[in-house]
Length: 317
Image 1 (cartoon, rainbow, N blue to C red):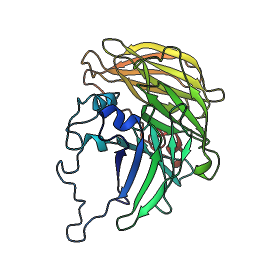
Image 2: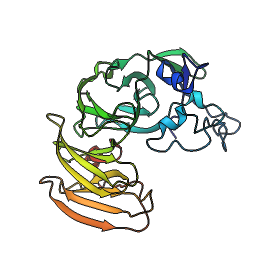
Image 3: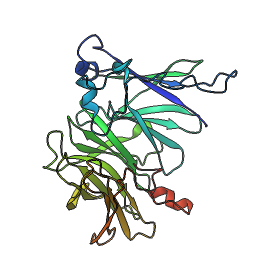
Image 4: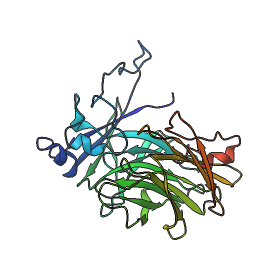
């Protein structure tokens, strides 16, 4: 393990309601975790350090605000959920679900350089400041939190980054990430659909075509409805095609590295059906289904060459 971090939230209205704890803003605190020399292990075995009692499942951030995910310290929850990497191989993005934000880490120094704030109407880029050492601690202040977020990813050429805004907003913020300094990365567009209103349907997972001309987005519908997948033109950031009624709970996608196929799983959370829907990357022609009774959560095509990493789960979720 190269590095480990912990993220905590200190709400300005932490003595108020659970909803106000995040909505009225506060401070995101990032701490570098250190292994004690005596044990060589992080002091977080078992459930020690957990803030809620079980997983914050996809699209369930609002359950925390409603008090339906109890635990030892739910008000400190940030939802530090995943990491994706810029194709330039220097920057990594720590995805913060409860704040719909991304902490950009410089892997040459292993220090954060800025925070991208995704909601529409929020500042694009926030400073993050080192406040102490031993352990290293950084803080970033938020005036408010307009919505939660979910997954994110970089385009294969590294010029754009996008992350879902969910529940309170249902859209995808698109950042221009071509500048070598992440502190200059700014929102330039939002991917929207007139159907994305209320909590559902909502953009869920994403990936890009090998040539980068298209972005594929799974769209989650609540039970008992089947979910869908949309195709976005990355020049205009407009939806150009929809595959509807695919199956329950469409989640991750992978693309074949020859530029031909997209594999869209539907997962079987509802125990109704599961499988893979396949269509063309180039012509967007639907090809068919591979049924599977076992259920799915993620879909990965293993890279065999370094250039494949630009379109892999390393850069997108």
